[in-house]
Amino acid sequence: MSYTKIAPAKPFEGVPKINMPCCFGASPKKPIMFRIAVSGARPISYKIDNLPDGLTLSGAIVLGQVDAEGDYIITIEASNSIGCDSIEMVLEIHPNRVQLTPLLGFTSWNAFGYSVTQAQLEGVAEKMAELGINEYGYNFINIDSGWQGEYGGKYDAIMPNEKFPDMKGFCDRMHEAGYKCGIYSTPMLHAFGCSMDTVPLPPGCTQGEADDRFADERGGIGVIRKEKNNALQWAEWGFDYLKYDWRPSDPYNAELMRRELVAAERDFGFCVTVKARPEYHKYWEKYCNSYRCNIDSLGDWNNFKEIYRTYFDFIDYINKGHYFDLDMLDLGQCNLFPMSYDKPDYGFTEDEQIAVFSSRVITASPIQLSTTFEGVNDFELSVYCNEEVLAIHQDPGGMAAKPYMMLEDGDRMVHVLKRRLYNGDYAFAIFNLGETEENVKVYLDEMSTVRDVWAKEDLKDSETITLAAMPPHSVRLFRTKIKQDS
Image (cartoon, rainbow, N blue to C red; front, side, top):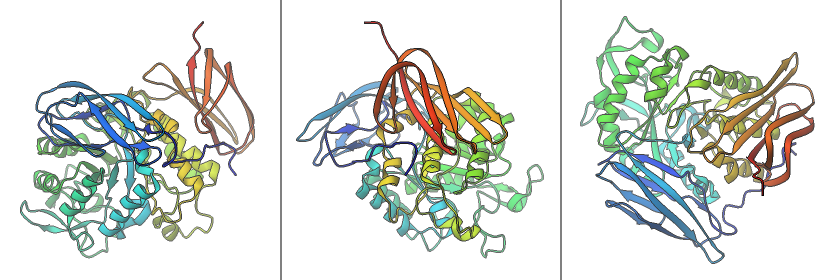
């Protein structure tokens, strides 16, 4: 049992609750698709007022395109036999205005590694719908390395291998279910994800001799540029997001790909990884929806702490639509690392899982579940599916969490992060990352209402948050509102 009390997830019970951010971005004259995520008892009916010309509502899915640039305020309503819920959403229709809140979805790497197949990903999408996870806003199904075959096809681009027999069909089915689709590539001659002895090696978006200006990682970056070829192919298949992976990452190669994505007939979210160094922050924070500079995640506490610390190098460079990435979440059943690392004690405790998840929430890192979803238990579902926790993650203000109180002394490590939210509330994450039990008192700016968001419980109005006997490797997450005089 965890120290942090968490409310049980009930995706298909009760009155409707719309679990979406109050903003959505897209380019004019490019396809738009998003699904209205709603928890609550079925059946649910959906209604939208003031939908702009060019968009239609089909069931729970909004489809179409908007030709005229501008901001459009719509009202979304969901109702069932018990009650209803509604939100106002701003559709921000401007060139390349995508992924205004951090990505929320699934990524294949830790779940399946290089052996990933189309059938596995379609199974994941179905399982997320069966469990109700997609009703909390998880709307991406992303393919990591392992899909690549050889060059060819209409655009002389990377073709899928035999594990992905129908890329367009895959994207079409995901879109019909309300998911967006992500794909993986690299400017290097050969992609990460397999041994350099693999035959054939998975190709990247360059060919030919290695360009002497760039590092020789995975054979280097080739002088023959294929960014346009591949962007055209991904757009034709129907992808919505690219994870672009090389080391060291640099703005020159990023921009060659980004401009082709922007020119494509579809909107693309753009993630640069794995070594997007801080000295290039002016590019990352302006042109990348997410950017990463850390090691791969795995179910180990020291690995988590090493990744978590990288956030502080980028804390001043986070803004709406541009987020620092703490990598995917190694929670639940992950097929990759237990086999690779041969660790019988592999995996996080319950408290560690809540802390790892909370770190992505408070820092506005993308949340990318990477599990097979086999044997999902009530605890795991309740970690994934807490609408109050995810509302902090998806807050439309795009503001970074800042250090509020930091203690490090030997085995002691207590971090308190504070994040201002769009409506004027504050989120506080109190981490005991060390090895000793701690008593923690956090002073608030003024008398405030205090909400324990993991437990979904109101605490008494206070000027402090006081925690006694907080165990190692744990977290508490609060939302506060300054109390107005009556």
